[in-house]
Length: 74
Image (tube, rainbow, N blue to C red):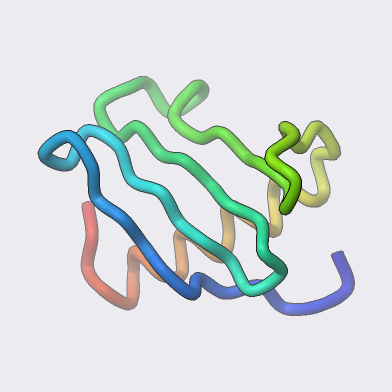
C-alpha cells in the first residue's frame, strides 16, 4: 500500500457492537469492539474478499486507529 489511507465513513450497528469503517481506497474494516484484540478486526478489499496480506492489514488498521483517536472512540 503505497498511498496514505484514511477513513471516509463509519457505521455503528447493533448498539455499538459492530463498527464498519470505509477507507479511501474503497476497502472496508469491520470492528467488533467487545471481542479480544486478536480477533477484533476483519479486513475486506473493494470486491468483498478478505485481505490476507499483513502489510495491507497493518495500513488499514492504522487508518482506523487514527480515525478513532481523532473522533475519540474507545
